Image (cartoon, one colour):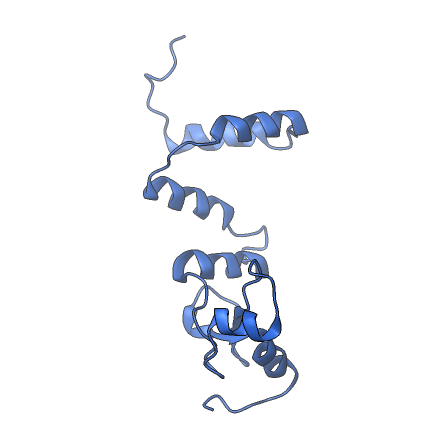
Length: 142
């Protein structure tokens, strides 16, 4: 039967996906897939589609903590500046002697809000302010 000439509907794709459930890939096979994809150029649309797959809801129909933070970075980028002390990432790294790989500004959940895919539920804080915010209350505007 020729391949590639039949239009696959959502029903077909769901059926094929269900048939693959529970099948484990060997480490060698995963490595081969990674090597095959190395260097491939993907369109912005394709990358967005792949990120949506990673950020799918869990079985309880909720997003996990990690998925929400990945989503924040994917859609809003890394936090640019601490909203409390106004420090920039480069200045914080220099002052604290952190390696350049560590990104010192994080998204922190505003007290009283629920974890969700809503940017207004989060503020950007450096490590120091984030720790202080989680353990004590400090005024929002310094």
